[in-house]
Image (cartoon, rainbow, N blue to C red; front, side):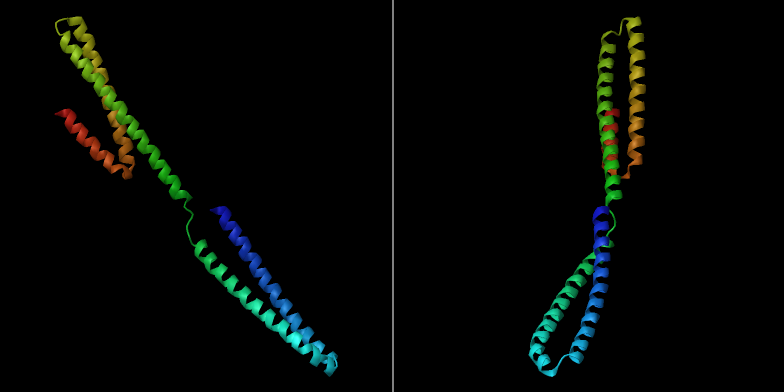
Length: 181
């Protein structure tokens, strides 16, 4: 966007310079026409007059066309120059997308940890009668629960930082309610 803006600025500057040059050239032509009329005999002026008039009409026509094109360009230029640069918004959207992806990854990891927790709970029930195994399994369950809670807390922190991800927060609350039941 910045490259386009610089090109438009350059073109607008060049256009203004050409307008100034054109105005100067036109004044010189008018002066030269007056000198020609003063210094040229009447009979030659009558012969050359239709040709000069044709040139004058053509130059006027080209000038009108040029001014219309320049005015159109400047109108578009003014509208484009007021458009804000979309880069910051796009960068912000990309940042939000990365956060959302991280939340999604954390949810997958959380689900896997909960599945592991369920597996440990099942094993714990099977080896209930063995005290040593029960102690190890209980400790493992506690560790997995702590990790699951830590992952859940991290996910909540990331989700709360991203106000654009409110739908993910609602989904997470539903999951939390289902797990508690």
